[in-house]
Image (cartoon, rainbow, N blue to C red; front, top):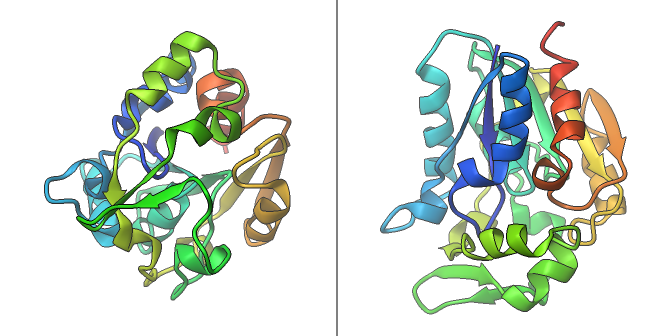
Length: 227
């Protein structure tokens, strides 16, 4: 069994974000990798469908069964990427958006962008850093936060309005990891998405538990590697 991680919006270097959890999994002999999303790291920036294609390329690299894990915006990506793919054993949504086919990220929020969202003239958007620590990373220590802040990036703004063409969770078992202390994606919002998943695991953690509580996130994943 292998694990593929997909990060959320407005950041780059997914391997850094997932490394604490990857290290715990490695202690149990599990191999993992993190997708590089073109909407965050390509030049010019890709879109949602390019992100899904990047994940499918990782899936295609091996016939070994995979657990596919998406965080926040990453839930949009894995719902699109995993559809019809024989390697995907289970989907994991971590405080994530869980769309049906034809839904866009913009459908799940208010008509106006949230206060931390800033649009740029080149078609990208980013998160205002003054909101990051109090809303998204309130449990990060100073060193970890410095690493996170260095990995904030502008993302193709088109991804927020693009509609998925598939809903992999309709055909593949899924687990929703609900983060009860999340101040960014609020628990009541998460519960609406979690209602679509096969199973729900609730943790008393903020928005990035795979960084600050890798033991808990790895434990949820490990529970599925023997089933």
